[in-house]
Image (cartoon, rainbow, N blue to C red; front, side, top):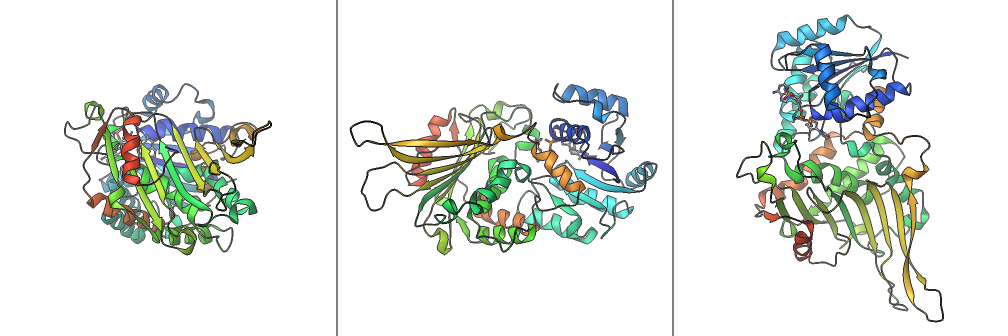
Length: 452
Ligand SMILES: NC(=O)c1ccc[n+]([C@@H]2O[C@H](COP(=O)([O-])OP(=O)(O)OC[C@H]3O[C@@H](n4cnc5c(N)ncnc54)[C@H](OP(=O)(O)O)[C@@H]3O)[C@@H](O)[C@H]2O)c1
């Protein structure tokens, strides 16, 4: 097994402490990464390695096992805009083993992506076409369509597309990967996966938490860019795409892009909200217009999805944490019985699983129809721990498997889709509770919506 060198820019941030270090610790503990792995933690703060580790220990969860990381972390201070600092970084890592896979992880705001990429390229720390080196970009990739295009254009001058890994960590979640299996490995579903059988689809990612101490990142980004443009569209594309030609990363991504290019979101249905205490959170401007909630309805202009509304719901400070896809089937068209709709729930978080609602006769002398639910709990079936999304993604990165990373055309299509919404200039609705939003959503949806 080769040596792995991971260089993380933005190593003093929340992502490093809360997600990357725990994922790396687990991967090392289970022997998935070479024992000679080295992790260079790059930041702008004046720290030495022992102080960095001390700080990281305070910031990371108490469950993190530091033993597998022992002797593997080095802190490197630099200015991200100074070329000579990249030269110093190159010299510092030259001390490490040469027979290595080098991965650079940018856990920083997107405006720094081209800056760091240029620095790495200028000193030849990463070279175009050199397959054992690759570079990872956190989401959001850009701040809007224009900036994303500029960033991407810059990256293509420095690196080959095959060296670029754009993260949407939802793709690393087991249940997101399971969507393909549920759809295409079950004739039961695939034969009724169209507008004649399906009344509507709801794709939601609700969070109970407020912005907490992450306003520095969140303000100015908001729910539309943080969640809709990335996670919700990724879920939608897997649910809505036509069957791919092959179970192969590019064939799947081709279909995902194709279907999202046929989607339109209705600006009239758009509803944006901000929870009332948001402007009091640390680092949030008193007049912030950032939305913490978004609802919008879309349609896909293909024969399969004619007139099927797709409802997108996401936000913070809501009634519960729940990421879920709900397929709402049409009722019995022959009207033999008055029944509830059949429903398929694909649960992504916090529970992972699938449930199916169908109709049965209630036991007894009367012919009363009642809904019943078949529930499959995915996490309950796991032997040992289910790997966290970041574990799966870091491992795929190490193995040069790019299927669970977003291709440029997926990202560009997603930015194109939200562009009309950003221009709609809808007034913010201020909310204390999710209950207040429900009627407003139904008014905007102009549809039956009973799974909010
Ligand atoms: N946290 C998550 O769970 C999560 C999930 C999905 C995606 N992401 C994405 O990951 C990226 C990082 O998120 P985060 O939560 O870690 O943000 P964060 O806590 O604000 O940390 C950002 C990091 O970037 C550094 N940084 C910012 N501006 C810099 C500059 N001009 N020069 C040098 N360093 C600079 C910060 O250094 P200082 O510490 O010195 O300020 C810090 O290390 C963001 O793009 C975010 O969208 C995060």
